[in-house]
Image (cartoon, rainbow, N blue to C red; front, side, top):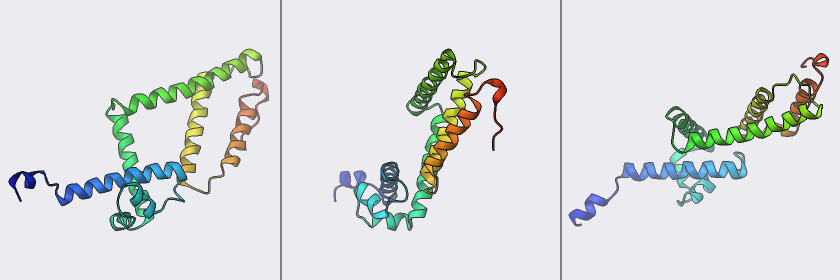
Length: 174
């Protein structure tokens, strides 16, 4: 083997790290596409371009893989927000602002049309609505027992009973 071939060969540690990174990316994509309950270790290995059994070898169980995905996503999220990532944070902020402004605009139209009390703070309520929806979405991603239809009815009732009533007719939250 020539000296040049030896210097370009990747170490076992580099190859293992690359395999883990690719499998975590594949698992993240698959969870987004089919949900965590339908993802298998074989699917992850195949999507990452490895044998179907490599994910089992690397992570052992689906639970261990999912915990590692959650940790990796959390690390990237915190890093992007904390370090003012030039790619991730601005995109997240822009998306959040767009969504919030759309809701705020709808609330302002309701106030103008008289279907909502004038005392409603459109920006404040839009912020609360986005936070509720994100929280529900996050819970549904990690817990298959979350009933999205029931959550939707609860959010609609909460908004109907508190945001869309005249100021003097608010109903207590049950």
